[in-house]
Length: 294
Image 1 (spheres, rainbow, N blue to C red):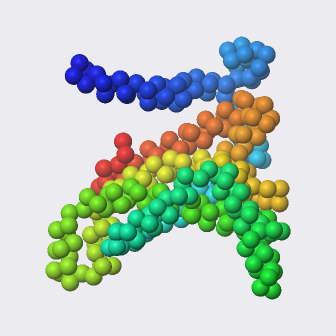
Image 2: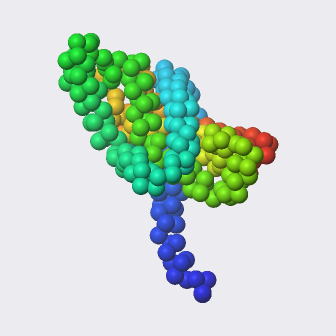
């Protein structure tokens, strides 16, 4: 402590942020078991036990939100999780350093855009009435396509936009893991007659498997969550089949409707399911011989 006091001092700020924004809000979970009234205050509201959860599970919007959350996040996990792996494998094989850096920079850029900006760009490009792509289709004699104004088209557009926005940033960890692979493994594979694709399959992928498993465990913890900003930036009145998810429902009940108790109960349910998924996946990974996360 005396020798490295400067480092411990630097640690105080992130530690304070974690305590204030991650741990102190846990006290508010008690509202899930109370009939919260603003006039009565945090502790003065009536204790109702599990009544809020019983009302929550009986709501039609709840089952719909759980279904949509699982549908969007599972499909997003299958696509947005695997695409960065293939992209990292391809970038790892590029030998021209300048070309590789330019492509990495272009692929990283969408990560630094907020979902509000991405949503605005999506409507400018994919809007049915005045979108650039639909204008081009109409000029070529085709029929305008409701990319964001029809439920199934909206779902496909949602997934593709998510891939575009996240695939570049997702490659960073995989490329870093690939950079630590022993070059002797590639040389031995070359001596054995392995081509570029065989090296990727038998050397690169097995070497980054622990990284893939760790990121998969972390991603599964968010299957019941999802991005509120992403859905809210792309939703509209014409598409309502898949846009009611748990984060959106928490916002509607808690912020718009003022039902803090029900929104808190829904958020607690979401967090518990995410925790169970992380622990289960971690145990399965350890049984399969991986290090796991915990």
